[in-house]
Image 1 (cartoon, one colour):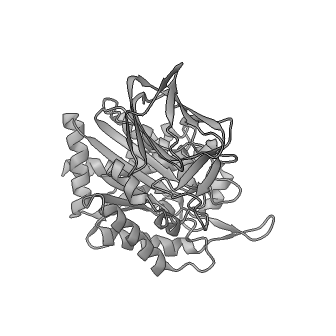
Image 2 (cartoon, one colour):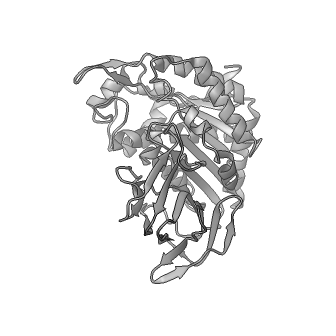
Image 3 (cartoon, helix red, strand yellow):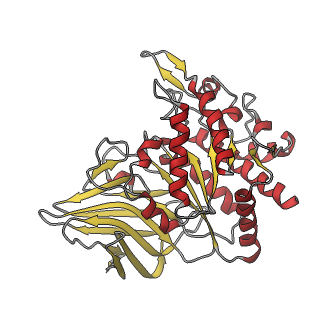
Length: 408
């Protein structure tokens, strides 16, 4: 990477918070000294991002929107919520809106992040961007659930005790085939939309009070349908918002096929996009690095059409394995190939790289993570403790880059 600098942090300075975050455990297979953001010191986009970050900290005015896009690692929620909580723990007076979320478990057998609970007795029809054909147009979230022929209720309760995310403004992204108008139930009171924008499929609810629990009511009768494609929670407060966008099994091509991706992204206007897409791309038997890079650049262009000044941080793929037989796994040697592409992408976009692959310990390191209880048996996904550790490491690399920028 041209003029690339390693924002190095001494290992001993890093250990106290790492040990505290992971119940005083130190793992000798993790390369803590590699836990830095790699970027060009003259990067306009990264320096602009850090300047804006500092400005919000000093003035307590404005919002910084961080959008983290990925696959199952992101849908699980533990990784992104760890980063989110770390940012807000360091900025307790700047808890901005909770931001975009999706009611995953409104559909059967669809896992939901733990930081908010979803209850939907009438399970809804699921559409994901990994499907070859989309029954319903998809947007930024890359996933949708549809109610049909019955009154459906989606109860949502925010479940992160360390952060007060009470919201007084909710934007429901959704579409009806025949004019079904959703409403909210809060306690015993039903609220109709304050504004409906049929061009962007948005239903705005201005609430008279801040709440952390609400119910979306979809009054579908026979022949009616209503598709939910996202829920944006706003509290009109300045600060930091960490939006988590993830779909199990998703690859780059799947996000590129989301018809309303750009339309929905305009609602967030991201200041920085953290990319964690690639583990499924590199799992393909014929992994084409040229196609991988061009697909990423196409996605970057679509985001820049919303905000030309958006910064980009690329997270390299974690080390992973293929399942060869019932009890035998083989290391995925595409990991180092994908890693090289991520560095090129950072150069292409004036962005940054967090080298998760190297920090983990490199090729075959996932075996050690699995033995330590940090990765699942498939040697692709992490356990909750593993995701929390990855999130902590990523945040520390980001935080140290901010400190390095401030010292300059």
